[in-house]
Length: 121
Image 1 (tube, rainbow, N blue to C red):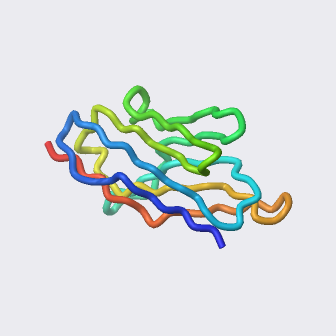
Image 2: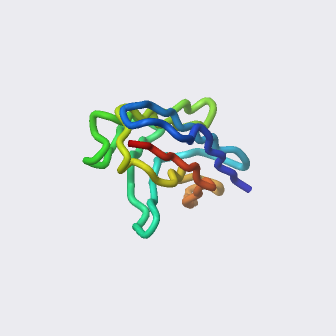
C-alpha cells in the first residue's frame, strides 16, 4: 500500500508565494519520478513540473517557468513545489504524482488527493 500526502495549499494574493509538499509512504522499493499536476474547473489536468529522483533533472510547463521550482528530498520520499509570483490563472487543485517501484522492476503511478491553491487578484 502506497500513500501520497500533499500539504501547503491555500489562499494567496497575486504576486505571493506558496510551497507545496508531497510525501510518499508505504511499501516503496524506489521512486523514479515525482511531479505536480493541476486541474482547474472545466479543464483537463495538466503537467506543472517533474523531477527525476536519481539525478534531479526537471521539466516545467511553459506557463510556470521562472516562477515555480520543483525539488526533492530522496531520504524523505518527498517532493516540493515552490511557487512564486503567483497569478490568478494558477488557481487550481494541485495533485502530486509519483512513479513508484513496488515489486522488482514493476512501476506504477500513484496520485495524491489534491490540494487547493487559490490566487486572488
